Length: 83
Length: 429
Image 1 (cartoon, helix red, strand yellow):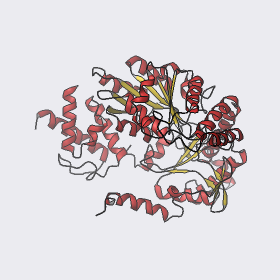
Image 2 (cartoon, rainbow over the protein chains, first blue to last red; image 1 turned 90 degrees about the vertical axis):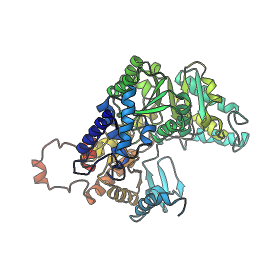
Image 3 (cartoon, rainbow over the protein chains, first blue to last red; image 1 turned 30 degrees about the vertical axis):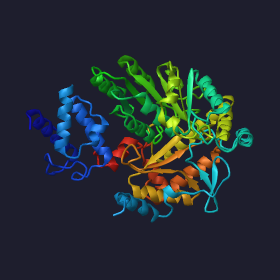
Image 4 (cartoon, chains in turn green, cyan; image 1 turned 180 degrees about the horizontal axis):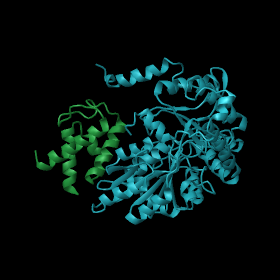
């Protein structure tokens, strides 16, 4: 795992903790929809907040392929590299 | 395992709706008496959720034109616009629409859904970007999915947020197409189109406006939000539908862009479907004329919208952020919404029930749309029924006695849509 990936993941987890307002174990293997029980509206809102946090755009088709926090961090990393 | 097993959770939700009474998604009207009255279970029911803004579905002239066309040209075209399915009337409707919008080009699609499916998927290709408002209609999302462009969402009705996202994309190659709606179908709010047009111009993007709910409703000539906001020149593409203010079915796109007609042989949802039947062309051409000849319909529509919106708002219901012919009341949860909807129906008023995720927030909506041909008495009846059911179900506070009423503050703050959404979602949004 690269340094930025850990940074992205830490920031994503930090953002989720604020959103969830409850203690849930969060790591790279956490399934965003199944484990966190977020509805699709909440997931999309969270993705948009990550776009702003990292100053990137995450196209919808990239969101569709993401299931876990680790996968999300990898997508964010790749897009951070692009910008 | 059945191939349909994946729908088990949806099946459960759907069946639970039935347990309350009538399932809102299985409504059948036995008869239509007029643009504002139908028959449900043998009873006359006020129709307050039909998008029939100008009340043209029973217009005598439109009916006569449709009857004459079906006799002259048959029941259907049985073919595509690019094969045997283009008749003189298809071209006549296209030129009527182009003239009405003062644009060079027009394409007519078989449904409004297909107009969005076709235009979005064809205009924005591989390497291009589609920028969609988060509250966009399903047809816009589906059009985006059908095409090969990258899809980026911006916050609802937020030109600054759009600017921010376009800025992030500014160094990347590819065309950027921004899509917004004249009136949003769930809450009836309009886009800040003037500001969106500024951003579009500044960032060199293209702009498409879906006037599905605003055609015949907004603008001095009924051309929609682009006309009302005075930014028609900035709207590169205008899409719309015949199935609301024009009282039939079908969709269209008008534009001034050079070489527009190449889309006729590139746009799959236009090419690979049968064209609209002659009767639909005939009634729609007449309805378009009616709409222009009778601006008083638009006047009456807005009077009715005011009557319903302010009637419900004054009672304390959580209506949308602005008055429009779409008047939605947000309630806290789905079981309450279904119960409320059923009681309205039992009381003789039909409207639409919208449940998340079809709604912009987790709050379910009791969604009305008024028509120019509703009588004030019909609107008042609906407001009275809303009040009665609202008090029965505790959505409104019980009526207080006169002494306590006098002590109450004069202007009770009415919870806005956002606040209600916040309550409904536990403040997560």
